[in-house]
Each structure stands twice: as structure tokens, then as C-alpha cells.
Image 1 (spheres, each protein chain N blue to C red):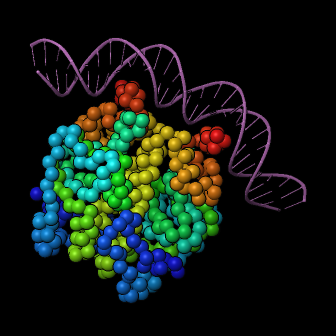
Image 2: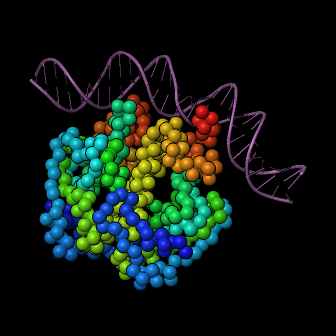
Image 3: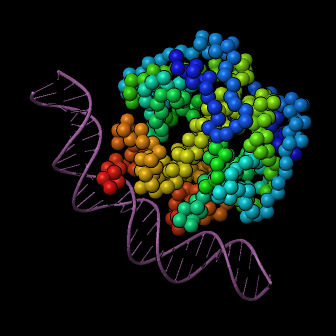
Length: 194
Length: 194
DNA sequence: GATAAAAATTGATATATTTTAAGATTTATT
DNA sequence: AATAAATCTTAAAATATATCAATTTTTATC
């Protein structure tokens, strides 16, 4: 599974004198035993509103979206694909029922560990905290960028998507991208034309 | 300084069997030697556009805002006060010039360490990674919530401010809160009236 | 405490974006 | 391959929010 290779080669996004070290063989062995696999069909749910997000999932292949319902319509929060790590941020950290859904937009294969298993690993293998730190920082950075983009007007949000999320433009339906940018799909269509 | 007390009592926001342990006395000693103090007058800057954010600062007292300039006008991204840890997310992680400013809105006292010192501490005192992990998670959670709020219409954003950020409403000028919510101060004023 | 400067409010108008509705494409199903 | 279903596009009207300008209120300065 690509996930061990992935964990072994993680580094800080920016410069750093102290490289993240590969995992000890003990920890690798433990992970191999602990990680479980899950396959999602297209449109299948990984998490639904009201459920508590108990798993951190690594996407081996496929594409997932996170959204919530507002007046019956879904509003997309993010899209993640191969090599990404996903969970519902608020639900997972607080271990409380989720207001958001996570759904596969393409057939997907995941590997996951549970919340309890994660914290046990942090405890038993402190070296893994370094991995957690780098990954949390990575998605924090992304979330910060997302909240930055959302402070801009619709046109500029679309421009940002085109220049920074080119892949989504090809892989994800426009109706999903529209709510991701916080605009209607009709308006999205207009902006695109120009 | 309150910061050591603060670091010694940090815990996960949600439930967890494995409590975060108090710092070893070696690490406490090292921190006491490394932490530097900085006082900011009202309106003084901690970071300006073009600078690289090299410090993680703990707010001992006071209130700071982060903003960027858009067409000559400032757009506020967050406000932090006593007990918070601040830096420019994008600039600090990537160690690249910042597009945002950090400024004191009230006279403030800070303690800080540099980016390099932080990573050296992670390396020499792995136990500190647990602290970094919890703090990063805390602000990731906040950023996630912020990006969630920004996906809602202006009225609801104002409601969110009233119910979840009551303190800001009293401590921060309306013109700053308006851009924080992504609306003009005139419209902010109108919403408030009702 | 008086004056100036900045911030907040209010009104009238302009504009971007949404809503509603219809038609055109594309995708899924038998 | 044919039909149905979903998605995307386009247009006209409605609406929320921004802009501009003037007035009041609050805050800062001498």
C-alpha cells in the first residue's frame, strides 16, 4: 500500500534544517497491522450528517468531497484525491456528531485508522507526532488559503480555481464547483463563458 | 510569564484517553532561556507585507489583528487576544514573504520564539511535538470554522459573530468587523440596526 | 474642555448576483 | 440505439449588497 511509502517520505512544506525521519520498523509493523482498507463506490458515503467522524482516511485512489446541507441544497467545502488524508475536521477533533457529509465522487480506495488508534500511536510511538504535525500543518495551510479565497469576490474566486485547482476543474462537476466557490451554478456558467 | 503555565496545561479540544503531559524541567528551562519578550504599542506592527513571518508569538496580554490590503483597503482575517498564539500561517510555514500584516489593536505584550528555534526544539525535545500538534489542531479547527462561516450569507455571518464571537463585538471597531465578515461597514451598520 | 479627526449611521442610487424559467447538452439506463 | 434523467447554459426579472454622499456621533489631540 502506497500509504507507508507516503508516510515515510513526508516533509515540511517549507524549508527546515531538521528533516522528518523515516518511520522505525516497529512503527511500520504496527501500522501494517492497524491500517484497514475500505472501498467506496461512486456516490457512496464515508460520513453522513449526525455520524461522528471516527476515522482518519488516506486516499489510495479516487476523489471525495465534503459538503453540508443548507436549505436542502448541498454546499461543498473541499475535494480531496489520491495522496490526501481526510476526515471531518470539526467532528473528528471534537468527537461530536458531524454537520457535514463526506462522499466519493469517483470509485475510491482508502486506508484508515480510528481516532483512538491514532492517539494510541502518538502515545506509544512519539515519532509519529512529527508526521501528525506536518500533515496537520499542511491542511491548516490549505484551510487558511481557502478562507482567504472566500474573502474575495466571485470572479477572483473563479480565477483562483482556474490557476490553482486546475485538476478539480476537469474532474469535478460544475454544480459542485459553483457551491465550492459560493456562487450559483448559473452564475458560474456565465463567468466561465468569459 | 503565563506562557509556561499555559504550555503545561494544554489539552486536546475533544476527548482523549492520553492526556498531554506537563513539560519536562529540561524543556521548561530551555524555553525560559529561549523565549523573548516583545511589547507592542497600540497600532504598532508585528509583521508587514513583504516581511517573512519568522516568529511564533504567544499573546500575554492585548489584542492583535491580521489583515491584507485589497485595492488600498484592509481586509481583516482574524483577531487574537490573551492566551492565543499568532503568526502569518502562509508566510511562517513556507518561510516566504507575507502578503498580510499583523498589528496590535491594543497595547500588547508577547513572548516569542523563532521558526528555527521551534524546529530545533521539536528535534531536541520531541515531547514538544505533542504541544505543537494540539495547538496546530486548535487553530486548524478555528480556520475550518471561519471558512465555513464565510460560505454563508452576510446576515448569517453577522449572527455567527454575535453568538460565537461576542467578545470581538465589544473590543473591536465595527469597520474592522465588517471586513472580517466580508461586507462594507455601511451594510454592517444596517444589519446591526435590526 | 474645545476643536479637530475619525468612525458610525442614514439615505438615495447603482450594480453584481440570485432567482425563476426555459431550452440545449450531456450522461445514464433499458 | 432510444429514452429518460441529470446537468449545463442562456435570458429576463427580482433582490441583496455596494457605492456615493451627507450627517451625526464618538474618539483623539492640544
